[in-house]
Length: 269
Length: 83
Length: 139
Image (cartoon, rainbow over all chains, first blue to last red; front, side):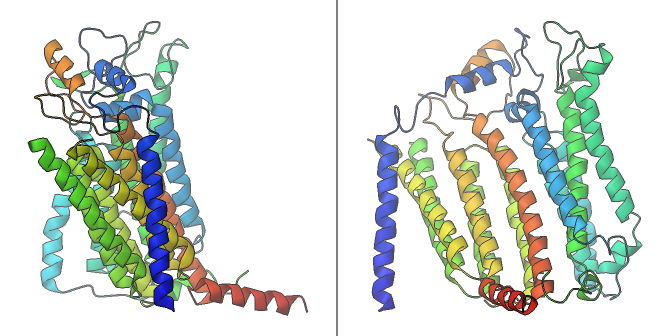
C-alpha cells in the first residue's frame, strides 16, 4: 500500500513543480534569457571606476566590492551587527564556563597528521590574509578571507587536542577585545568624514562628492585602493575570524564541563 | 558553439544535483547525509563558477564544504549517529 | 525557443525541485539534525536561484565576463559594460550567505543545549516529556 502512496506522491509533486515552471515561462516580461543587462546594472558598472567622469566613482575596479561597501554600505553594516548578535547569544548560553580550561586532556592524532597540519596551517592563514587585503582589485574581501582563515584554528583544535588551545596566547579575553575593537573601527571609519570636515561630510562617504572636500586616498603607491573599502575589508576580516574562533571553541568543550551549566535544573525549564 | 557547450554543462550539473539532494534527505544514517550534502555543495560551487560569480564561490566553498560539515559532525558525535 | 533557453529552463526546474525537497525535509522528519541539514540545503538552493537570475546570453562575438575591470581606458570600459554579468544579485547573495551562516551556528548551539536538557533529539519525544512534566507540576 505504501508503494502506491509513494508513486502518487511523486507524480503529484512533479505535476505541481511543472505547473510552477510553466507559470515562470509564460508570465515573464520580455525574454526569459535577455541579451543585454538591465539599465540599473549598466549604471553601476559605468560609474564604479570611471577616470573621466568622477562624480560618483568609487576608485575600485571590482564592482561587487564597491556595491557591498560603498553604494549599499548601510545594508552591510547592519548585516555585520546581525552576525555579531548571533555569536554573542551563542556565548551567553554558556556564560558559566567561558574562560575555563578543560578537565579532560586529550592527546591528538598521530605524528604524521600533526606535522602535515603544522605546514598546512601557514598556507591557510597566508591565503586568507591575501584574500582580505586584495579585496578591491580581485574577487575577495572581508567575509571571504575571514571564512577561509577561520578554518585553520578549528582544524588545529581537532588535530592537536584541547591542550594547544588552553596553552596558547590567543585567550578568550583577547579574542573578545579584538572583535569589539574591529567593530568599533568599522563605525569610526564610517563616521570619520563627518567628524573631520566639521559637519559638511556624509556618513559612509568614500571619495569627494559635490559639496564636501574630504576623500580617502584612491591610490596606494600605484595600485587602485578603493578608498575606505580597503579599511572596511581589513576590519571585517578580523571580526569574522575571531567570531568563528570563539563560537567553535565554545561548542567543542567536553561533556564533563558542559554539564555544569545545566545542573540544578531537573528536566527542561 | 562554446556558448552551447557551457549551457549544456550547466543543465547537466544541476540535474545531477537533484539525485544527491534526494539521497541526503531520505537516508537514515546521519553521517551519510552530511557527506551527500557536501557533494551537493561541491556541485553547486562548480555551477556558480560557470555562472561567472567569483566572489560567491570563495565564500560558499569555505562555508559549505568546510565549516558546516565540521560543525554537524561534531554535533553527531555528541548526540547519536542513527535516526 | 532555442536550445540554450531550454537548458536554462532545465536548470531552473532542478532548483525548484531542490527547494521543494528541502521544505519537505524540514517539515516531515522528526530528528533535529536532519531538519538542520535540510535547512542548509534550502538556503543554498535559494541563493543559487538568485545568482542564476543574473545571467545573460553572450553578446555577439564576445566572451562574457565577471564584473571586474581589467583595463580602465574609455573604449575598454564601453566593451566591459556591454559584456559583463549583473553584479547586483551577487551583492545580495553575499549578505544572505553570511546571515544564514550566523543563524546556523546559533541553531547548532541550541540543539546541543536541548540535548543536554532532555537527553534526546527526537521532536516527538521532547513533546511527550514536556507534557508529562507539565502534568506533574500542575497536579
